[in-house]
Length: 107
Image 1 (cartoon, one colour):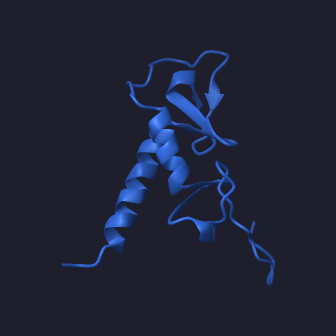
Image 2 (cartoon, one colour):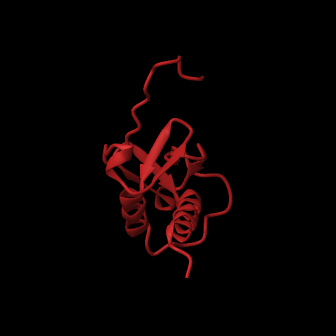
Image 3 (cartoon, one colour):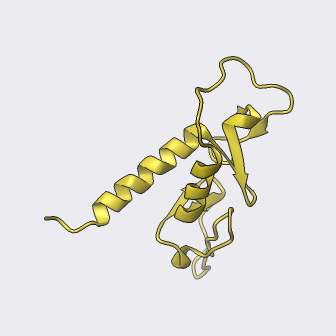
């Protein structure tokens, strides 16, 4: 839903609570944000990564805040109030790599 005219939306990382202007990059999902610092923390927590488990997740599965899919517990991790799966982590790492590449001066 669009913000009414004159309303300022404050964007905070759902992992650490940092404001958008306090971090280098902020990745937005549907009603969830994650800064570059928390993406790095998710990557450390999910290492080593393993292939996704085929079939239906168990009843105690966790839901990724970005893709909203149910995942096995070892295919996702939480930072703050944001749970992230390995698939979304890969997408976020790609977005950050592209942003970093675009911000470098041409040589």
